[in-house]
Image 1: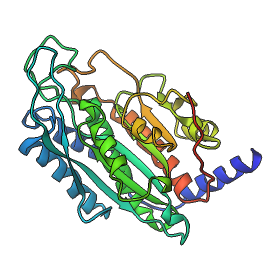
Image 2 (image 1 turned 90 degrees about the vertical axis):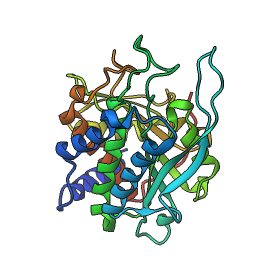
Image 3 (image 1 turned 180 degrees about the vertical axis):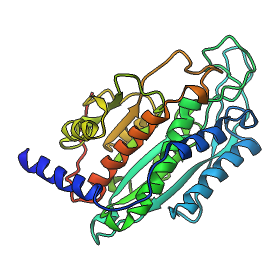
Image 4 (image 1 turned 60 degrees about the vertical axis):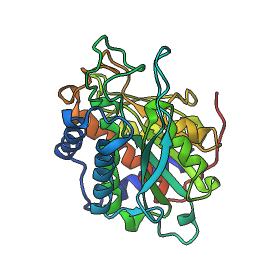
Length: 318
């Protein structure tokens, strides 16, 4: 254990010892503002508005120097849409995951991957998953999950600036149709461009914009890889956060699709709130200072594992 923490301190010294692109509150705001305007109509799967959102994410990946994992950033799939019990079944719609990656530099370890993901879709005008009495009203989904999508873009940009320090490769995925039943992540793990056994860890961000006054960030799955609980507790402390670290409690977002394939996971969030799945989940309620801290925390986690030969293996939980 002493050797583990010594290695951690060396990595943290390297982490803050060179200049790099910084994660900024302004850019987090710009991304969330784009994703939550009334014109985006709650980022429902399918159609021209959905394509506008995925094109925005793909262009941001390209601007940051993130390469497509396959021939294109876009991984197309068909999504079945949830309906109320008394509602007629809707036809499947075309939607997309947006997938990019940074290749590591170690001849052997670059064939191993860390995945960072967040779903970009939301509920549109409500539907059966809405918690609100307001029918046919845009649900902007600022925390759920424009916050995770903006974090994905900012962390990807920062990791791209430190690409020369990475041994392992990093994959970035903005998932579609999570609100319809984790459909984007399910499609990815069934149609992965890389062997699933080469994915060492999947970190998922779903609702990371509402850090509370106690600075608590919650996570499940820290026991699914060696020394995960100790690592996340130490890095959280270094980031000025109060992490609530669970070995199991894997949860119900896109990382579950990876966990079911025997891949180590971390599911990150800042907790529930009364605005969840309502039209009141707006940008005005996002804690941007807190979100930046969480982004820096997740960046440090990926950097530690991707820039070293940190031993990884899947450890089942729950």
